Every structure is written in C-alpha cells, then in structure tokens.
Length: 431
Figure 1 (cartoon, rainbow, N blue to C red):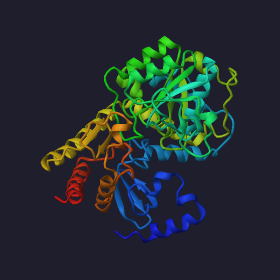
Figure 2: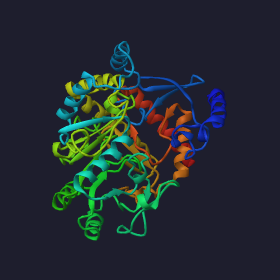
Figure 3: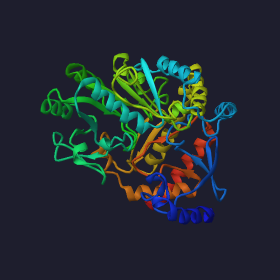
Figure 4: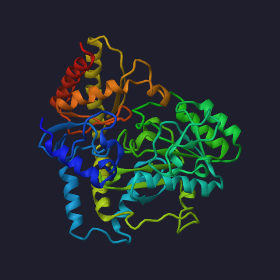
C-alpha cells in the first residue's frame, strides 16, 4: 500500500494542528506509524487519500450502525439542507426526535438536545447536582465521559481517596468533588457512600464500558447500583453514548432491565452528525432552564441537519427491530471465528463481546475492570494493529477501545476479517 499522500498531509497538519490531529487517538501514538487521512467512506469500507480501501470496524466510534454513507441518512441530510443549515430557533424536528427518543429509551421522560456526548455528560452532572443540592459524584476508573474537567480525574490512593487531576488545566478544586471507584465493585461504591454521607449527587458510568476496551457488567452489578442510589437519594446516570440504540432499541438499560434516573446519548441520534442529548425523569429534567434554575444552552443544539439525520436513523431502528438481531449475528460470527483461530494456535487471549461490540485483549486473564484491562500487552496489540492494517482491516488504534460492527458487514467480509486475523496473529506471534 502506498501512503505517500497521508504521510505528507500528516507532516503538514503538524505545522497547524496540535499533534497533527483534532483528537489524540487519531495520531496512532499507541500503535506506531503515521495516521491515515480518510477521503471517503461507503458501507463497510473507508478509503484513504492514497485510495487504499479498508474494511472498517470503528464506524465513527459507534453511530454508523447501518454502515457509512447510508442512502437513507444521506438523503435526509440533503433534503434538510435545502431549507438552511442553522436557525438558532426551535424546529418541528426537535419535537419529533424528542418524542421518538422518549418512546424508545426506558429512562427518558424528557430530553434536551446538545452538540456532543461531552456536553451531554457535563450537563447531566450539573443537573444532578442542582436537583440534589449535593456537590460530589462517583465515576468509574477507566470510564470516559468526554473531556469535561470533572471527568479527567485519575484514582487516588484507594477507593475512598479524593481524585487527582489527570490533565494539566484541571484544578484540584474541581478534582476534589470527583470520587473514583473500580468498575464492577459494589463494595467500593458502598465505601464511598459511607465515607461521604449525604454528599453524593450522582453515580455516572458506562453501563457497558467501551473506553477501556469492551468490559461487561458482572451479574447483579447494575442492579446493585440501582438499589444503592434508591436508598441514598443519588441520581444514577447511564452514559449510553456508545451503547444507546446499538445494544438494543432502548440501549443497555433495556438489555439489562435496569432503569437509570438519567441517560446521556451521542452521535447515533444524529445518524453520525455532531449531536448529543441528555434526558431522564420529568422531575429531574424540569430543573433545566427555562423550566428550572439549572442553566444550560447552545446555539447549535437541535441543529436541523443533525435532527434530520437522526430522525431517519431512529425511525428506521424503531420500525426494524431485526437490525439488532442482524448486528448480534454478525458479532457472534466474527468473534466465533476469532476464537477458533486462537484455539487452533493454542493461544488464550481474552475476547469480550456483547452484540456488535467487541475487544480482543492481548492478555490471558479475565478483563472485568480497568486494572485487569491494563494487563494487556499493548506493544503486541500495536504489532497486531499494523498487521491487520496491511491486510486491509482498519481497527481502532488503541488496545483500550471497543470495536463497533455494522449491518454493512456481509458474510463474505466477515470471513475476510477472520482470515486477516489469523494471518496477523501468526505473524505477530512468530508462529
């Protein structure tokens, strides 16, 4: 594969953009080499500036459930463009998509549109604090809720210790109100609650985290969080930016039968366009201005182009529940093939999968939280990434990311991915 055009663009970009990219993971620092600059995408494929084609398993980090450049989504965007790009005023589509989200997501009785998942999570925490009159909240180690200051916190010396800033620019004043707990540990949550009585406004988590690689909740974990929050008057927030409308029509909360008080949503509700939303119980959401005292605003919130794309996507998912069966079947087929290759080679690497999300961890230990995820051999993953890329398979350029499948993956394409996986494993393991 020739990559001259991508390499030249990267060198030029570094002169004008920090690190040459507009989001850090795109720089390929975790896997080596230079990033590819993408020119177009269609179905299951992306094409770089040198016209190399790749079967792609990121799908814009989740929202392209139906594959890239789907005609239905594209046509909805084109029709909306005919009427203008932004009004900064209410539109009918905002009402339509809000009604649709409420009908699909169990926890949402009212919803507010924003422009990104980061905006959604920042706003949800602010509303939870305003509603409860408390300042502190609990987040899980390894869970990513965007780049808001209060979320960029690393663990202190133990679960009851206050967090420390994880990035320069995040103040200790902000960090002191963020409490850290390992995912899948109800004991840690109980300790934090006991150490901070009547001070915790919210618990926020990805019910199925995908930002430390895909990790599954242990049986009873989500149910246990619900009971603790009910007992302590804490707002339970599910960050379903990745899982919403992907694991099931109503997201992870429908799949696991656990209803949070608030939910944050992301790019899927815009059909891949920049968008986010947060919603929840009516009595909580009525604290949001102008109904209540908690201020949050945005000129581009409910942007008519994003709303048109999102309506097309959500209406399709709502009326075609077979999409989720198809996604699950694709995921099962791919991971079965991957495991078969590992078994034949006598390798015991861990694969976590739920429906159309999966991660191959280069460790032989069970991965159930951030500490166990970090046992992975990231250098080996980097070599595997490059081996797959050379065979035309584009993976997330980090061990600590879930992969996302789409209905554009045919049986033949799944077979090609599994074959590339086998060849790549043999290459990097020297078999």
